[in-house]
Length: 611
Image (cartoon, rainbow, N blue to C red):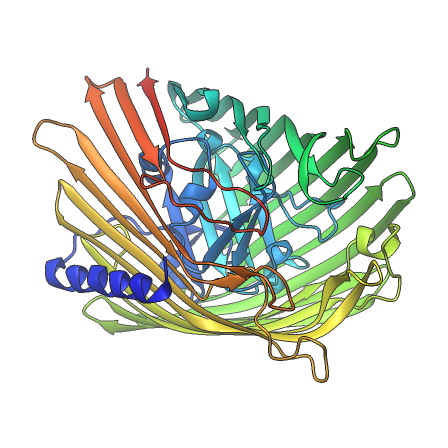
């Protein structure tokens, strides 16, 4: 579907919101963020662009595919190399997917052994996630390397009692989740297990052999309150999956059906302690994440390929209130990186410290800070950031932020067969300004944001010479629009829209002036949920994505598309709920990566029980 239709549709939905928006909103508790400073903070006390999706919304979307929830976030573009389980990259405001720092329960889980050090969202099942928090824009002052494009924290499920769900549907897909936990005044503990099995469909658009995916995962977290001010915490996650893949078989070496396999094992965890006094708050801990990938099959013959990546981190976050309105956020951490494949076994360290001064008045919030990084291979680096917000009255709020990003080359980019030890770190500077009306959890909310990010020394792969290299400069800029309304208790409407311009600005470079690849210029998600008088819940998500290019040379075009998902659920009493959905209702054919299939129309149904 072409862009003129996409823009017309988004304009129509926007007009509908303008018509139905109520004049007043009901107040609720302040949404809390941890990505802004590393400690709990009200979203209203920061000028940074942060979006939050909680469990009720995740369950409303239905299904195991977390990317279907993530597309409800502004500034987000998603690409996938085939069916479920295939690599799923998330780009925020035009940044590379590897420039998004991903945390699970506060643990950095980016794959240290992956070429760009990114995170594969295909390996997280939505049933294990309770909360999604996305900070859009660089935030290396607080989180350091990898936070050039943004920071996303996924919080795993924790229930008081037992919750279970199961579904079955297209491609012989079965998915089940079981969660159990206990919450008392002193103890909070929970454990969630998920299992997924699907025959899938051919990853290669020219193929006919289905590529399946099977995974099980286990996640748990807990807290013991030693006293009102001091608590001990622990969390852990394990995921084991097998993905059938297509490859480049002889003699043509063109992308086609093969019997290739990718076995992935991930585990991560953290132990720590929290202290919260009248003026001093401290959070310290030790965390690790480990990812092992084994590639076997026709493309690898007698030479299977395995990568192992490990990140260990000792960290401290703190906040000290100098006065009732003036405080300082501070922290220090040390990270140990390890990478191993058939030809390399390398490691390095990064030691960092940061400080941020913040002031909050009746109508103004201001914060500014700096970070110092000492990298074993690249020496020292300073990064800076600042943000502020101004309450204009009548639930109108103006906010702005500036952030710098710093990302060291991965050990794969430096030392693998394709590596170059002369690579420079990537750097970025990001700006945004926005205005908000109402509250996200109220009866009406509207927000508009303008953003720009300039990057230097970006790292890419040189296909001609089979080596990683620094490509120079790039710019991404655009606008985000968020709308949400609840004209009645039984009807909820929402819309997010992103307009994006990207440009390779490398002076004299081969691709100077080209668009960055796989960055659609327009992306819209419109959402409607209605509770009928009979108790039946009906809903739809409409996703419109504009045109983009698959390659840096802008030779291969990825056409824009529209998908429509329908869903329904019916509670049977207080504990049981039946649900079902149809994804891609009109069977739209599209690709987010050239040569790779996407799912056609598919139906699923299941049940959910809570005890």
